Length: 341
Length: 259
Image 1 (tube, rainbow over the protein chains, first blue to last red):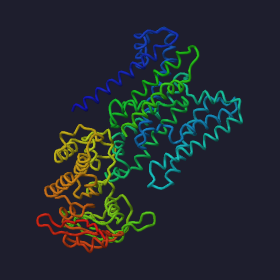
Image 2: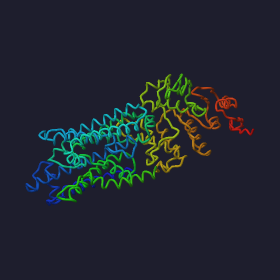
Image 3: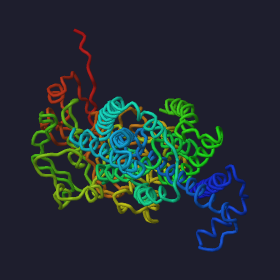
Image 4: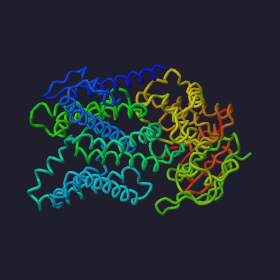
């Protein structure tokens, strides 16, 4: 009883954290809007009522800040829960959503578009599609390669296949990039990740995939706990381990690819958020997965606030900010996981 | 009634025939111990019964052919306690025991009240109530063994496969664990099929022994039939004496030859 009480408390705290992060994200910017106005105007838009903000201010809120804040939340929640899911199905604390080559594939797709697509073909539309396809193709290739190593090989074979595919695609990407040195700047800024929005378009692209993936991954939360006893014991408990792994990896990959296609490569969220939660509440996926969505969403929104304010009016790439906080944290996680092992 | 019947079961691993045409019958409520030297195929045979390795021949669980049962249906009939279970260090004993209910919970569903009741009963039966909140990483060897037994018990399967249940336990904990298994068997019509390392303990607790060597059954029967100097020296390459100690069964004593 006390445990489920504690779980409810953590959930409530995470919802509060996310709400606070969203509010901060919507408030911080060159134009002062006011907290009460932001909340009232947001509800007015959602409910189809009249916004209390004046025309330009309302546009700043509804066309500029909120789409960006919501995109950050969706991408952050997706990367965090996908990271937690990957760590679960591979029983590897260092797994992240890019483990099976999603990042390298997306990078190659984006580089190809930037290098070869004619400038007239509106790179902006083509780039997310190419990145999405690149990520999906890379993970499918890694999955097929890993499975061909034999059913008994399991998680390790998949991870090795992912590393293989990722290095191969990165080599291709570097080669293409070297052939088109003039594109380095654009590719580089994409690789570092950014939350740039044009209205609600990006949110519309990523949200359906993200929501579907959250449902599938959260639906498997009990089974991810079973997988913690190993493939063989999970099988002896009646679980079809390969099927669970396929469903969870597929959901996490589609969502990651969608996130990457609109935001570039944002590192470390998929590792630091789940691990922080593990340190605080323990390892059960029943609580870890929902908390990852909420905390990951809030974390990326706050990170984006830092990215767009420290050098204002210039922006830091958000990937730099997450890595700046992520790398030292990662060192701590490594030390703790070594101690408990 | 026969709980578990093996009919010429063979298992090949990496091209080698590790289990070779093993036939055996285990009656409902019986305890059969597989003994034999390292590499005789004892563990592999248990894994075949649990449906974890492909095999030739037939395995019948009560009235059903094991290969016709789904993974989940098999797990409702057969519970496996591996020799070295992988125990997630940060799971609590209660969470871990609840995993035993997995074959009774639908794919994306969660445990019902009856599952929690069954898990709690298993916790009680193995005297783990005071440890239920502890994390597995903080348990001693004997406590861990009780936790995995509780998980297997929560599975509510009539057949229990035990792979070396007493490895790495001191002599007191060994007796404790085997007594628990014997008590559960007497109380709940549990059928036990186990591998055993310690021959004396195997003779004391199991109804019948099955001696395996190079994947084949080379002897079977009561402790008196199987625990003989001739059989043990032939198949283990060991020098032993077997003492028929009144009240403690057959005691297998290693003998050091000084010349």
